[in-house]
Image (cartoon, rainbow, N blue to C red):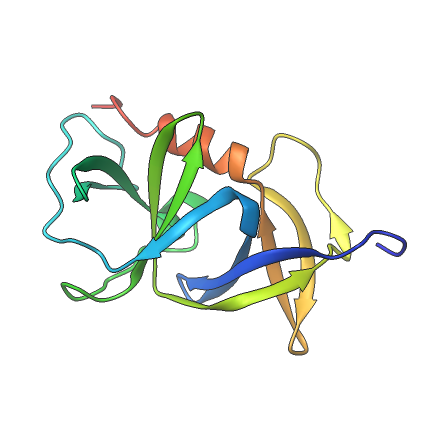
Length: 145
């Protein structure tokens, strides 16, 4: 969309696809502390919980959550993007964070979707995610049993 200033985003890969989240929604990126603690009655996208400096963080496989497969990462591989949403932490397991950069959507999606829009970077498409919708869809994965 022309006329909209670019917003800085964290850029990463999950399920073989490229995604981005607004930088101001990401607290930090960490190496997975596996094995993750099992979460009973959780949906298929939930990997478990991990201890991050004394704080329990729920970890969701972003690829499975958005429907592009699931990350089959070896122990200690990949990265966890930590979102800060309403004083709760949520970890999104991704294959690789590859940078931070300014993006603006070329095409916007309807509100309520996890996808905020589609942008362009390095000559290819990248999916811009809505952090609030990702957090809401992740929360719905708990207690599905």
